Image (cartoon, rainbow, N blue to C red; front, side, top):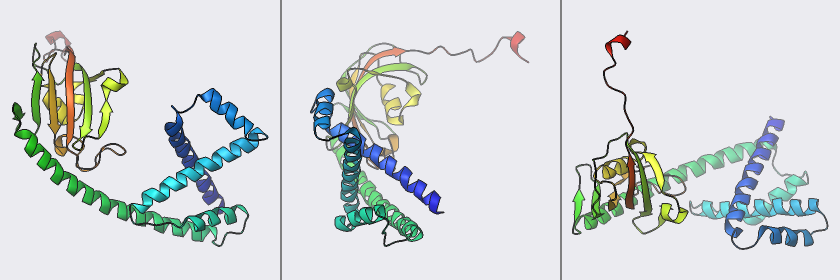
Length: 269
């Protein structure tokens, strides 16, 4: 158990370090030139081992700081001084808790976080459903908005031309996606590259909406949660029960040839 637990802690530390390093990189990637950053880092330490050691410690420290802030949102308030004391004492072999006590404590803590997160998610989902319904009701009153039987709202901004789309068609679109408060979670225009996908391979709201459009068309969509990511949302970008708003431009349609429903008699067995 002791060796297994140590391996688990090591793995957790590496995951935390990787996650923290990614976060640090995201915060600073446009701030300095990598070559200049490397040169600056070298000048601050007498050797590489010390520089790497400090970088790992700083990454772990930032991760723990972010973790404490996130847990505070769940009304879990960890004591920073005690946390640091635990790190220092365990490192020096003077931990006040045995491996088993640490394991049991963290398991209990994990369950507490899970329960509180569930309560928070349920409240957030309920609030989002209410706000989304009000937003959709207001949007539905705008001129030119059509509401389908499923609850999808679509407002055509430019009519396209051509054949009606089928589920198996490959489509090329440019789009911007936001939450109802305007928070942007995806934007193909900013990426500089439209998205290509099979029509039946996306959320139901998109499939239904694009089938109401034709090549060259542009529209604004308001998609209710049941036609998007539902009660679970999409971790990291879309909260539970979110109503989504999309500005969509259908650039191209490429039908996929389907095999005949009836095979030649000679091929039937």
